[in-house]
Amino acid sequence: MANLRDVRLRMRAIRQTLQVTKAMNLISTAKLRKGRRVLEDTEPFFNRIQNSMYDILCGAGNVKSDYFGRALKTATPRSAIIVVSSDRGLAGGYNANIFRTVNKLCEALVNPVLILIGAVGYRYFLHSPHVILENFSFKSRLPEVVDAKEIADYIVSQYDSGVFDEVYIVYTYMYSTIKLVPEAQMILPLNLEKMQAQERGTHLDYEERPSRIQFDYVPSVEEVFDALVPFYMKGIVYGALVEGYVSEQSARMAAMDEASKSAEKMLSSLQIFYNRVRQAGITQEVTEIVSGSAALSD
Image (tube, rainbow, N blue to C red; front, side):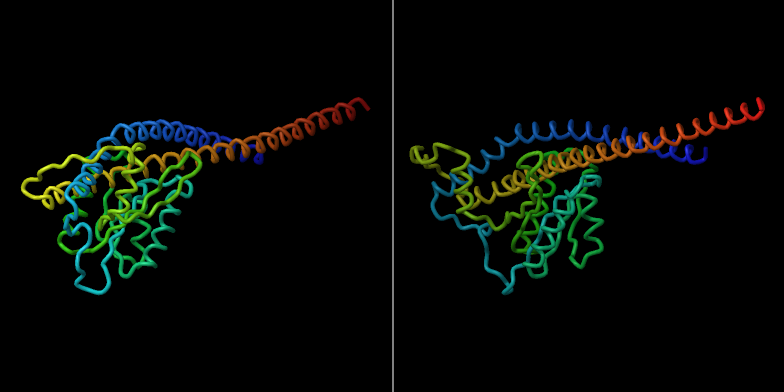
């Protein structure tokens, strides 16, 4: 009976775990849908800012700006890496893949500093030799534009002050619900060729478009361009935050689905074992009753 009691306790614990994993699966599915919808709604706004910057570059010719690079005071550029991780665990290999990508990037750079987004990333890199410059956390909620603005303003201000000379961002891009790939992208200094490639990808009729309209920029082209850069950074950071958020929910959804399947398999195995032990106990009791009845009859 003690054995049966232990099996019943284990089965009850597995059933409770199964309820939690199924509930988390449903919650992650709802958050994933909401995150993708928000990203699709806000993406045109940031694309328009990016197109405006490229319009300035094409219409005004050679724009001189520190955001395209500047003379280094030292032979080695100082680098900052923005790491987009999660505030919670139970997301499979989502955070581990990000950390692996960041460690490889740190090995390729000299004396990098980290700007962390997410509590899990902070707990991991707190025990690493890398320098943590700043940490942001959104308490597992869907990132908002104001959050991206806070991070982008911090990055631009530190870049303008000369704290670092180049900025990378590492986040997870969701190609599909089963293909989540960590991406490492340099966002400062700006790359004109990359902006041109993005412009061609945004407009399918890029080659057939008429010549761009010439504008007069007040007070100057450089000042207008420099004023747009923080908005451009905000768009990049916001896109990375939302991509990381939906990738996290997709990874957690897959992890909870696998956990639910494992729990159901364990529960089925324990149920079979429980039935066998219970049937063996009943058979033994019946045998003892029959044997006793036969002995009394004799």
